[in-house]
Structures are given as C-alpha cells and as structure tokens.
Length: 262
Image (cartoon, rainbow, N blue to C red; front, side, top):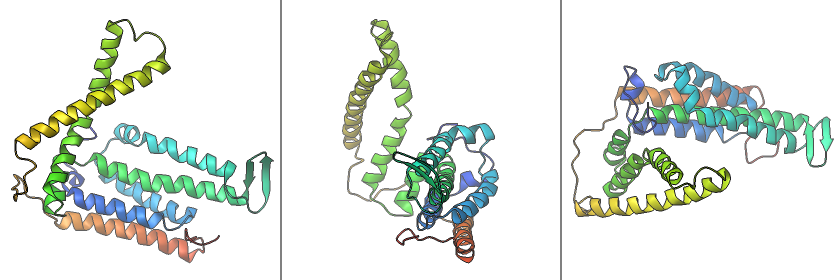
C-alpha cells in the first residue's frame, strides 16, 4: 500500500474526510506539547493504541510505516537521559554525561511523547488519498485552488522519487561509475535527483498553467467533500484522548506545563 495512494479498505477510517484526520492529529499534538510529563503521554499512547486496531493497517504495514518514529523515540529518550537537565540523585556523571532522577524522568516523558504524537499522525496520514485531501482542503477549508492543485501535483510526484533513484543508479552502473565509493556516490546521485526533480517540476508547472490550472475563476470538483458523522466521531475521539491525558496528569500532580519550571 503506497503511503501516498493507499488501497481503500472496508474500515471506516478510509472513508473519513482527510480534513477531520488533520484536525484530530493537530488536537492531539497541540495538547501533548503543552506539558513535558510521562503520565499525559503514556495515557494518550495507551488510548491511541486501542484505536489503532480500527485504522485498517496490518501489523507489518504498521511497523514499516511507523519505523522512523519507533527509531526516533528511543534515540530522543537516550539523548535526553545522557544530556538532560540534572536534578535529584546522580547515578552517572562523566564529562557532559549526567544521569540523574530528573534526566531519567524527562527521558521517559520525551520518548513517550514522540510516540504519542508521531504514531497517530502517521497512521492517519497513510489512510489519506492525495485527491481526497485536495478536495477537502479546497471545499471544506476553502483554501486557494491554485495552492491546493499545486500541492496535489507535488504529492503525486513524490512517488516517482524512488523510481528515479533506481534509474539513476542503474544508469551510473552502466557507465561504470556506480560500483565504488558508496558514500560519495550517494551525494552525487542525490544532487542528480535534485536537478531532475527541479526540471520535472518546472515542466509540470508550465503544463498546468497552459491547461488553465492557474486561473482565478471558480472551479468545480468531480467529487463532493463533506463532513459527516464519521468525521465528528473521529474528532470527538481525539478530544476525549486529549482531555483524558490532561485530566489524569493534572489529578496525579505530574502536569508540567512547558513554559513553567519543574
């Protein structure tokens, strides 16, 4: 299943308007960044994990899509553990490394927060079709059609990057310049891909302009983008998760507003 063109399943999440998914992800993210504590992030993550079963993603697909977040969370926690603000009992101190009670608690909170924010955002994103997203942005949020159509065209081209990379690799090997110096080859090939992308983007912009996509007139859309009860349920679930995380954190005394001193 492509991250930019998911296969529609029977699960209701695929039929939900992409605008509602963006709103739900934004609500969760804004709530979780208000405080740096492990309780609110942990509560949100547990409730989100229950809802993931209705996302329509298999275990293998879920792990592959969320792999960057699953790697980033422990890395962020480890960095915070070693170099976070020291407080309380000291367990390890060496040069800049200072592991204390405060850094341990902050590391746990950081790791859970990365997971609680990143996982639902990715799960909701992979169930979004670019065309449905463009319809929602234009018809529900009433964003300028020129901006929406340009963004849609750009998203459609993202899927070609991997094919272009493979084609460049095969072409360089055919010329005998792609069999050694892997590190140097990566950067030179990346620059070639950048040039190719710029040229393709320029051609696409010219073609779209020639076909009238840049006109200021009112546009019509083949499919109507509406907000219904499914969208209301998703947003309500996001609000419930956010409120539950905040209430449990405040009631247990762990709420640590990001602008205050803990």
